[in-house]
Length: 461
Ligand code: HEM
Ligand code: HEM
Image (cartoon, rainbow, N blue to C red):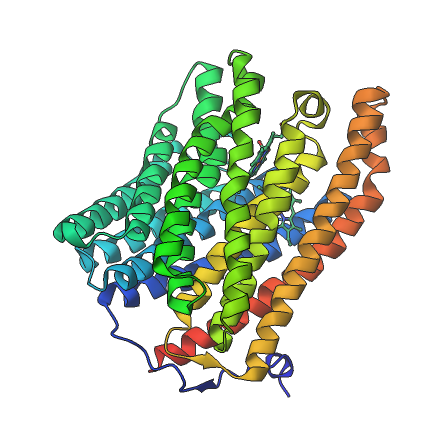
């Protein structure tokens, strides 16, 4: 028996769900999603090697740690970005029940975004970068990503304008989210001599992309999925969507201010940022309430929808814990003073970026790529196992990072011990992180394999 069969990934599908009318945009969206999943599986391997390198630094490696880290950080935004592009094309056509304005532009956009992502990752592997954390590729390559985002925004806006009477809130929210992704990245194609301007524009991508733009695109997808799966009525979900969208914009725009003081902005941003970060939690709480009510009244029978929901619920969990609560704790100025830039922040970064955004994108990509197929019970169980491994790995590695971060802050910043001495004392926790990373990578590869098999099967139809 092959390994993947052992886990139930037989690739066989029931014919329970006949594909609905397939729009060209929905076919194109599959390319984006399958590419996103491929980058996600690559990321697990690259990241694990990086984590091993931190505990065994003399290992022979063709790429130095700092460039490996830059590739890992690039990947952590590229695959969610590409997956989101695919999800939006899929769900906007489902929402509006019509074709997008220009499938041709969507095809061009795909090749452009892939080309420039690969140029960034490839040049980093050749040790060509600019040292600007999170946006380490050459600025010119980000112009290419902006071009892809501009094509996406134009295409989506035109799609909405083609039939103005038939615009739904979910479609509008996803379009606004995509446009924000473009507007926030654009300033990063320039270089700044003023370090505050440089840091602030970088934060618009590192933080505002996730806390505002991706919130909007994900909310649109969640709303459509809830209506399609019968978890909430359209009226109910639209009320939530209005609240989520307005709070994401207010909470995102001002909440990101919790970082500004530390990069040179006036102190008022400390208070504004911390208080307004709080509002980001409200819509997630409401979503949990709605899901609970929905699941009480409606039994979801489709394994495809159940697996999507497992991924989505994982995201909701980390949204509340790893992103909002943990984010709130490190936002408190007296805490941030000690925790800034420690492994504790890295714990938050993993729980928030993969936990809340990554899981949503995986849910969307799985849903898109499995259209027209229903996993067998064994296949479904294999998918759930992958979700469990991802969650266990993520929790294990982030907990180890958080303990390491607490010790780092205490020994180094409070007791004033030597940096290297402290760093060496953290090794046991970094080894635990490697073990958590292994479990995570296993889940990553299993899920990617499952999705890949589903994609192959549905492609053949
Ligand atoms: C989905 C939502 C979120 C994502 C994806 C996210 C992601 C991240 C990432 C990647 C970092 C590390 C950045 C770096 O090293 O410069 C970070 C840092 C930080 N985040 Fe979040 N975050 C989210 C939500 C929040 C929320 C809601 C808050 C506050 C309530 C928050 C507060 C912070 C703070 C204060 C830091 C800086 C820690 C330091 O100074 O080292 N985050 N976040
Ligand atoms: C096998 C799983 C993973 C392992 C072993 C891993 C390992 C690492 C390592 C070694 C670093 C650099 C140094 C450090 O902060 O410790 C790092 C940083 C980072 N990783 Fe991962 N990673 C994994 C998965 C992910 C995923 C799936 C994402 C997001 C989609 C992600 C996002 C980040 C971010 C945002 C940082 C920067 C943190 C900061 O500067 O505070 N990682 N990771």
